[in-house]
Each structure stands twice: as C-alpha cells, then as structure tokens.
Length: 300
Image 1 (cartoon, helix red, strand yellow):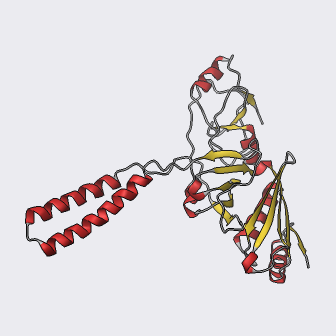
Image 2 (cartoon, helix red, strand yellow; image 1 turned 60 degrees about the horizontal axis):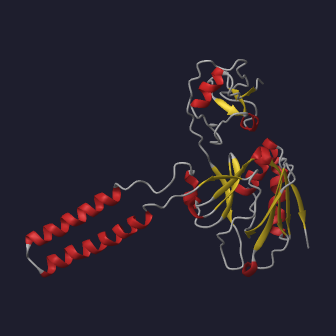
Image 3 (tube, one colour; image 1 turned 135 degrees about the horizontal axis):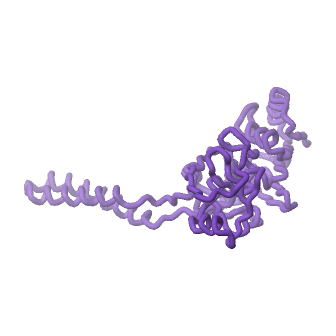
C-alpha cells in the first residue's frame, strides 16, 4: 500500500487541494496533512482509514498508485448505503429525541435535515384542500361560470407552486432516514449511528472504530416496561451507553444477521444477554447454523 501525505508545499499537492476533494465514502474533506491512497485502477482517492475500512481493496483489486498523480482528474463516486437494522431508543415517556452523549472525535456529525419549505408546503396543502371545497360549493350554489373558472385557476396555481418547491431533504442525508420518526440506533452496511426524526441530527462511527457491541435484555420484565441496554465500545476505550425498546430476537432476523456480519467481516466483538428462553433458543439455533462467534448468555 502506497500512502501519500498531503503537503501544500508540493506543486502537485497544491493543485489537488484546490479541487476541494472529498473522500467518496465518508464525505470528509481531504485537507493538508491527511494521509491518502489512490486506487491503482480508477485513480479514486481515499483517506487511509477509509481504505482500511474497505479491506484495502477497490475495483476488485488492492493496488495503489506509487506516485502522486500529476494530472489528477477527480472521479465522483456515489456512496450508496443500505440500512441493515434499526431500533427506537427507549424512554420512560415513550420515544425520545435525545441522542446519547457521544465522543465527537469518534462519532462524527453526518448532517442535518432541512425544513426550509416544509411549513409553507403545509400551508399550500391546506389552501389547496379549501380550494377544492370552494369549487364544489361554487358549483352547487352559483351558476357563475367565470367565478368557478377563477377558483379552478387559483387551485391549479397553488398545486403547481407546491410541486415546484425545492425538496426539503438535504443531499447529504441517506434515503433510509425517511423510515425514522424518532430517535433511533441504526446499523447500515457502512457505519453505526444515531439519528433523530428523519435525520434532523445524525451521528455515526465507521466499523473500523468499533471494538465491541453488547446487548443486555436480562432486565426485561414485561411489555409495560420493556427495554434493553446497549453498550458500544470504540477502539479508543470510549463507551456509548443507551437503552433500546425491547423486541423479540427471532431465529434468523436482521439483528442477528447484522451482528454476525460485523463480527465476521470487521472483527467486532458481539455480546448478547437475555432472560428470555424464547430468545435463547433462537440465538443458539442461529449461532449453530451460522457457526457464529457471537457471545451469548442466559440470565435468570
């Protein structure tokens, strides 16, 4: 692997920095002093942490450029992302809007959902509904064709105006946020994170930073007070502790598949505790079938 440290005193690096390049996976800007590698096949540039996260491979090969490209032509890659698992955070009053206290050096802020046009669109929706009622009322009450046409014209203008307003979702928020209507803990195929409603706030850490994930459902009592505790430990010995709403762990569900994926591919230690014998049976069956190294224990 050939690593290049960005040096603003070098002419080819100056040209590179002037392009304001970003890591195609994380979206982080590449700055002076950053260590990067260039894929030998497509010439895409990656921060060293991202390259290691990708398993030191890209374009189905592991080669990197020995020399810093003199005529660097940036290639834009779309960082697609798939949601593997998510669960709402528990609180004594139902769902919560509070993201757990996190170390921002590990859990990076990923972006905000913008609602600049949201309220105005709501007003237009109401106005359009009233306009429809007005048209029907005018047809029933009056035979004045000019008045009816005027109402129809106003309704059409309102509809066109609403449909042509800019989208109220920021481009840097991945599409799976539309599934969230409160604060959630989620795992995608690229990172682990916390997100408030529709991505108003989103903090995430890439798998390379995570040491272990521990789920403890041993305190589950009844569905009236159902929760599970989770601890995520990063490789800097920092911890994020939070509480999830309780859910049954099925024999082959998305949670077990996701945790097994993290353990096998990234070496993240997985620990699960539960006092549910149904959960015990399902987890043990999964571990046996998948030859999984998930650590599991049953409590009384």
